[in-house]
Image (tube, rainbow, N blue to C red):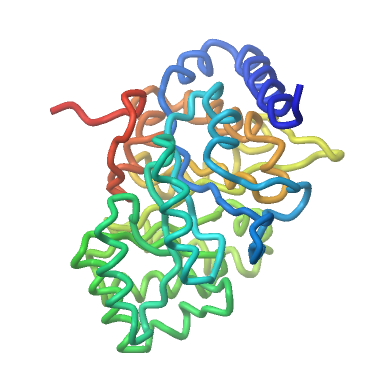
Length: 323
């Protein structure tokens, strides 16, 4: 058995075992199709290499076929790729890699709204229905906090708003959350998805928590702002924990603040520990959201992502709204 098939087999076996252990609620939620709104694609074996390759134990390319074999047994029927490269040509590379595999329903690319060439690139890529928007924050030397005061940057975001595209942010910090509020003030209909919020909330000290909580309450009142519940997994003694009690306080804070209409699932595969622990990541949130009832679980696992990203169905297994 190849290493790739061995991982896929283990992933499906572990996922089934975890679902069985979690009881009837998780089994009921298992029938809900999942759209994973945060995976990365890269191929470090290309002649030019790749600027990002997941870290940790990633030794092979992260491509749709590899992901699908791991994800399908867990009920994941579609995925959105989040940029993993600052190279402009990799926007096209991702679109070409995604096109043949209908498990991929979109990509959030890497363009810089303040650059003179932004409109040309945007007009080119937006014609592909898999191009759903861009990711911009504080990765690759970008600085959303400073760019909010840049008229050229804001004009670029207004072009995205015009075209019905969205913006992911990365990576969460207190000042980034404040910047998202200011962006929404200036571009009020631009859909914004805040990535990896659990990782920030889990490391806040008491002094920073009050300011962050105030920003989160404000963001919760902004209709086009969504929160991606990604980077949830915690390792305990070197192993992934699916102990519901470990995650409940943090997930309660998110749910109580944002409600059932703004939270979105993202696995962060194959970044760091996520590369080997997709079943555990799914089970953590499946346990929590199944307890909120089927309607809330469906919103979290796919309906909210449709509102946030406007992805298009590419496969019969992917859900769609009635009517």
